[in-house]
Amino acid sequence: MSLIAVGQIVNVHGIKGVMKVKPYLVNMSDFKGLNPLTDKDGKKHFEATLVGHQKECWLVAMKGITDRTTAENFKGLELYTKRENLPKTKENEFYHCDLVGVAVYQNDLEFGKVLRVLNYGAGDILQIKTIQGQTLELSFSKANFPKVDIANKKIQIVLPEDMKERLK
Image 1 (cartoon, rainbow, N blue to C red):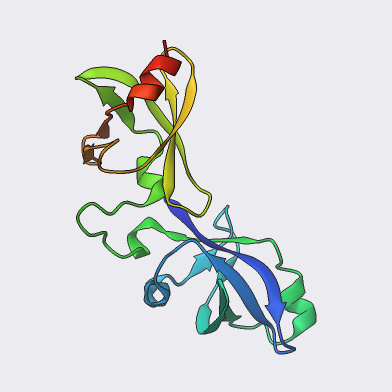
Image 2 (image 1 turned 60 degrees about the horizontal axis):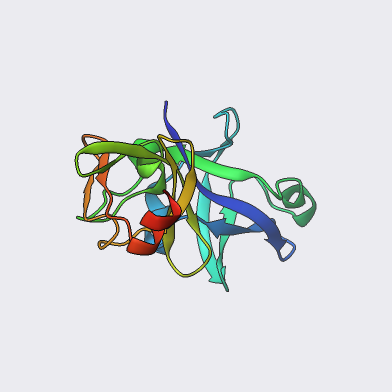
């Protein structure tokens, strides 16, 4: 079973057990089809209902959790769902988990692999480990990565000139 992280419980809200969840999804409407949510191991199951939002967090009520004290025990817990529960992506839209581990090619030669996807607030950045063992971070843009083929696990890279010099 493939589990995908969809958010993390960061705090509680009020006295009735509502939790603040930092979402890893963009649209609140995507939350509807994710139940049941689980922990990382898939051992604990949660039926969650989205009840609102506050700043960057979604307010979530969990079935069976009705008081603040109980809810506080879940702070820090990352929430997962089955891969098939996630909404289908649109063209040129990707889940981070689908990019990690994908081979990166430059001029049909293997360049490296995607280690992780980072985001410091200004957009996604691919962290790549080159076949020479170097690690680099590059903005995930059409200019830098003109062709992304998730089905065949291949990404084409076009390095900016300044980065070519640094990699020599």
